[in-house]
Amino acid sequence: MNSNTLLKTIGINAGYGAIQVLWDVSFELNKKEIVCFIGTNGAGKTTFLNNIVGILKPFCGQIIYQNQDVTQLNSPERIKMGIGYAPEGRHLFLGLTVEDNLLMGAFPRKVNHRTLKEDLDFIYNLFKPLKGYRKKYAGNLSGGEQQMCAIGRALMSKPILLIIDELSLGLAPVVVDDLIETIIRLRDEEGITILIVEQDVQVALDIADRGYVFENGSIAMEGYSENLAKNKHIKTAYLGIA
Ligand SMILES: Nc1ncnc2c1ncn2[C@@H]1O[C@H](COP(=O)(O)OP(=O)(O)OP(=O)(O)O)[C@@H](O)[C@H]1O
Ligand SMILES: [Mg+2]
Image 1 (tube, rainbow, N blue to C red):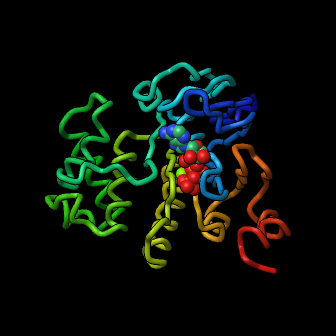
Image 2: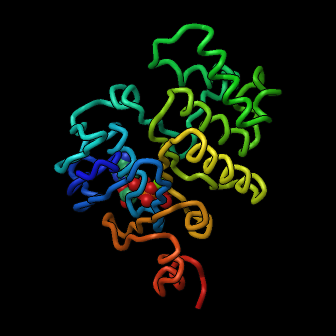
């Protein structure tokens, strides 16, 4: 394994019970990279992320994180190793306040009150609208604010690798632009490696260094974003350019 590799999967076959969804998925993520997964609905992107974070276990194959085989570790163990997850649909606790949602993200860490306060301040500085809404129920936030809260909650686990499933889905373009800027800041200023699933292929290629295209549970194509943007199949199938 290259010393610059943070995460690597080898031949992941996975699914639900007898239903196989992923077929021999191998991929690599380098430290401080931003990588995007793109692909049509049902291609297996979320299933793959759930295997990476330990919510699902693969039928076979290996997941190597920081040079360690984590395939059999459970999710809390992987979170403690620095894998933070903002899942598809956000899964916020809608009846809890913004601040309590954020604090839930710090639950796996054993930290004192002062550290928690500093970590909350970091999130409020990153996502300024959340500061004024800290006592508001998460269920009363707009979609964009909920996404900030979900990413903020994942950041409260102090991740080395931040995984976001569906960054821009349902959000106004101006909100998406702000989120993209924030994600790039997290990489550039905090050194966090980022893995994103993104339906909007233009957004994906704008934000990511590299991309992987999922089709029918396999990786159909991979490459640097500038090369994928020029690819004929990507242009016609995903960007609507004839
Ligand atoms: N809990 C489940 N039980 C059985 N099949 C499932 C389950 N969750 C997903 N699937 C199936 O697995 C396949 C891949 O789904 P997955 O959600 O991973 O795709 P996706 O690429 O994330 O799609 P989307 O872009 O819609 O989020 C689909 O055929 C889906 O119906
Ligand atoms: Mg999905």
